[in-house]
Image (cartoon, rainbow, N blue to C red; front, side, top):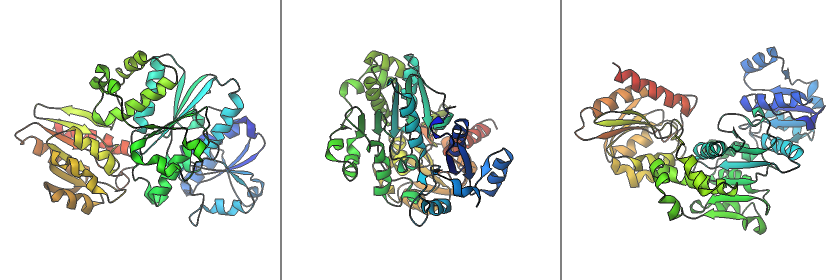
Length: 440
């Protein structure tokens, strides 16, 4: 665990005690700060008090100097959290998790032996940071993978030298003010989390915060095909804009390398290429990067083959949580029996037009029936079965009678929250249901 010693004897309020809030609380407490908490969940408040955490109240709130809202806590506007509104009038400082981490790095990185890599974007973040982490380990470079991928920043082990690799969400970046990674990257931007950000511009602005403190000593990559620079112009001055490095296209030497072609499907090529550019900036040799890539097995729930039969294969792509992430899956397979649906994030389903011909049957699940059903029903036989159990049974039944080799593709193209806590739980359930049906 990282200890935040620079706030010794200061008074903090942590709002939201999920894994991030608890991690920051423990780090501050170990460093000697006075920490109080609030969580909107009554049962969680009771449980945390039993564990020894101090709940904020009308008496101790007068001591608060700093507020650390967990990612997901609204900090501005009419929907701002009640304690944010109450303490802003007392001129308490709001400080984000990322800014606390930056202050910690500033305090220990006197000899510049630690590098920070920050990766964001709508799709591909986890795969990209995992590839970078895998390659660094294979090349005996000390590294830690933290952030939105699972392990909170302050639960990480302390590095004296090496690389911190951060997967960053729009929620985390939205609140950042001084965060300044040595190498930063926006992989892509498509509509997501609009229930929180309301507009695509506000969502993109939050993502572009990763570039807000850059200088000539930093390296900043972005996908030039996604209008990221156009959005960044509203937040960055011309000197900083000139430092952004557009990735216009993947070099032919990289794309045609035999090792890359063996391990990459089309949907992973961009993730591999951004990883390659970042690893080169860190000083790795091209041959060493290619060698490390060849042993990277990929992450679960991302076009993961979970079953092969003579006449069909089954793909678990539960990480597909928006229309844009459904596109590469439809592009990669033929004769698809598609299981899709959930909570949609936009109404731009026509983005699927180019690859819809690969679908021979659509099975819609989840709460957002009409958009998926009405779209696919115009082109192929489409059914609505609501839950995954019925969808699995139907898909296997169809696969067993189709005359040619086909693909059962579970690629929801929507969020999981109507039926599951997250895409991992949804993907695990799909895997279990497939296995149960096959073993019958």
